[in-house]
Each structure stands twice: as C-alpha cells, then as structure tokens.
Length: 364
Image (cartoon, rainbow, N blue to C red; front, side):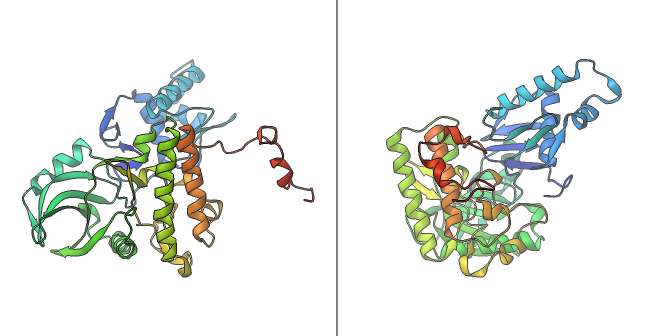
C-alpha cells in the first residue's frame, strides 16, 4: 500500500481506524486513545512494514522543539497505544520497536476484501436507508457491517425463504476494475468449495450494474475475538484446529490456496463450529502468482504480514504449504494467546532440535 494513499477508514485484524475523525474501533466498539498516541498510530499505518524514526515522530508531534522531555513523551504515547491495542513490546503483534531507531507497524493494513466484517457506527448509519430494498430476489433486512472493500447486509431470499448475507462493494469502489474483479474472483474461488467448514457461496449477481455475492449468514464471532490475547482451552483448541484443517484440505484438494489464513478469517458459530472465510486472495495452485499479484494493489502485500509464509512474503510461487505455515502460526496463537516471536535463541529450542538447524558457514 503506497505511503500516504490510504482510505479514510482502514483496518487491521479486529481494529478499524478512521483517519478523518481520529477514532479507533475494536470490533465496532470505540477505543479511547489520546491524541498523541493516535497521531503515532497514523504515522505507523501510513508506512506499514517501514521504520518510523523517533525523529519523524518528534517532527510530526512536537515541531520546533516544543517539548523538552521528548523521550519520555514518546515512550508514554507508545505505551498508551500498545495498551489500547492489547499489544506487548516483548512479543509485538502490531508495533515492533526497532532498537535505537524507532518503530515499525508489522500487521497487515487492509484496504482489500474480507468476509470478516465488524460493524461500525458510521457504516451502520450510512447504510441504514437500504433496509427494505429488494435486490434481485433478496430483501435487505439490515446492515451487518463494512470492511475495506465491502458492505454486508442481512437479507431474506424471497425464493427460498432463508436468510443470507449479501456482500456489495463500497460505494466509492463501484467503478474500480480491480475491486470488481477481486469480488468476482472471490465468488468463483469459494463457490466451487462445498464443505461444512467453508462459508457457502450461494450465487454472484448484479443489480443496476453493481455486483454482489449472496453467501451463508453466520452468527457467532471470529477466532480472533475468541482468542483475544488469551490461550484457548486445549480441547477447544484441538476442536477448532481439526475443523480448520478439514476445510483447508478440501480447498487444497480442489487446487485452491487460501493465502490469508488468520484468526480474523475463521468464524466460530454457535455451537463451536468453524467456517473459513474470505477467499478474495485465493488462487489456483497451477496458475502461479502472476494472477494474484495482478489483483493486488501496488505496494500492498497479498495477505496479512504477521501470518505470511516466507515464500509468500518474498513473492515466490505458492503451494498448499503456505497455508499450512500460516495455520501453524495460528495454532501457536490459539495455544499461547500471542504470535511467536520473530526469532528464538538456539538455547531456548527443545533438546536436539538445534542439531537439525544449519547455521551459516556450517555443514549439516
């Protein structure tokens, strides 16, 4: 995502940031954040995966030397920001400290399609006038929420008498060719996957030139919400893990790699039943990475940085192993409540495992 070209509202994991109003939401609930902390967050998400130096922060927040205790002020603002995000300096999920330089935002900043929508007060008010509207053979009942590229409504299928979720592009993306193609690609990828652990796509339609996807209506929460920084009970963890693996196996059997496996794209219904969401980044394994890259905006990573496999981060050819790598990170997070650190000292590895790791300059 190019620096300085973010939309007014951006998202990462379960958070939504309104850059225009200066507000932060978590799962649709407003999070209190001091002005200085929000300004730092804004700097970080405008330059994802890049180091924002402490001097850049000082120049933006306190120009012309307007504060004497600069170091303490930055430390305090960063601490409040991390508290608001439930992040930790030693095991960062969002904000990484770059020693003696500054900070780096390491989570994926999304302006791409996602089925894991969280309602915000702004999106709900702006879409409320759609209630009662008939789209094809669906009658809109209300707004479920909005993501970076999509708005999702709860609707009634007038032909079959069932309730569904209708996913539309956001109004400012109706004429966006890449966004339209991503929506259609998502429907094509997921509609061929008939499995109880994958969100069912019923059809892709069009109303007044505006495409939409009709999909299964789910009630519950995402796995990201369920974890919320705490380890899951062991039985529950294995229950979810086995269902996720069954869904991935079905996709891989059809030659589909998901490419964005993360807790926010796994939905837990009531009772504990798993549905894998968001095939907007999926690709057929035989097609290579060129098609996926063509549908990714310049500068934006195709996926979520914190859960990417090494080959995906490097833009290399992908196979099913990439999803399994992401699944392994997610499994670790289910077991511990956090993502693994970026590096583990050999002294902390289980006995004997270090002998299987080839160090630079050494022969195995």
